[in-house]
Image (cartoon, rainbow, N blue to C red):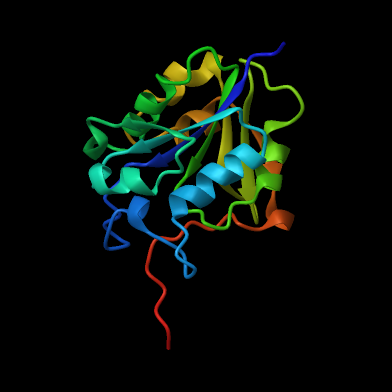
Length: 185
């Protein structure tokens, strides 16, 4: 039996451009973005999901689906790399972690499946792209966890330097992160 693949939702930031932590945001129907992200990972093939919280973690934990695990990024202010490191420490013997961000409410399970592939291995390193731009989800095989989490700014530099396989998910939509609150005209 192959090692499991664990989904990891990074949701620790303060959301300064957005005006609040995105872990607290709900869509127009009232569904938490945390639920969107975690559900897309499970529907896309992840055996388990870990949600990494930081800013306003105490109220945000109530928005996490009850079947997902929660970890608190103790030093989340240091940047997304710290949150990634905290999350990866909880992934145990997983062959790979599938990483996404909370601020992608349009992420579709089909994009997760495309990036995960058939049988993820500890050596895998893959990233979704949208309209030629790098995005999420990202597959980090276990062999890459320490290096990918070593930069406080996040794994982007490592993914580029290590030659992550890029998989175009433009046709699936859902790759745009939401950094500002949309206002009605």
